[in-house]
Length: 100
Image (tube, rainbow, N blue to C red; front, side, top):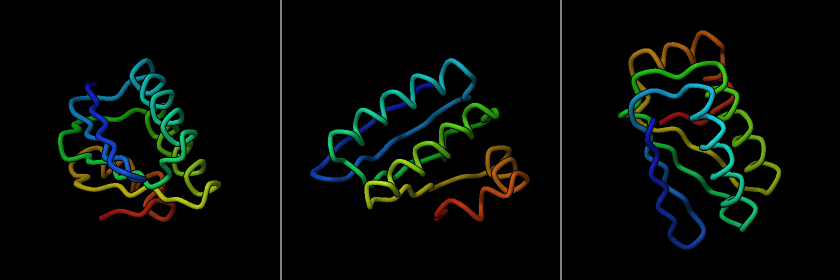
């Protein structure tokens, strides 16, 4: 997985590509928690380039969603398609996340 984070004012835009496995999820979580702890609490995550996400990746999304809400922010997922979107729906996380 490759991820790119662009920060402007109080919003972070995260672009994910390829596949998210355990190691990738840990790196992504650490990067985003650091950004959130700096006060950037509105996070938009573009999943359009993502072809696969495992349970640890989904767990990372849940963690980021929870942390942004704790700080009165939000996580918005955009561009989810294919297997990642299917897994989000199968796990009923589409009821938890804001998906555009």
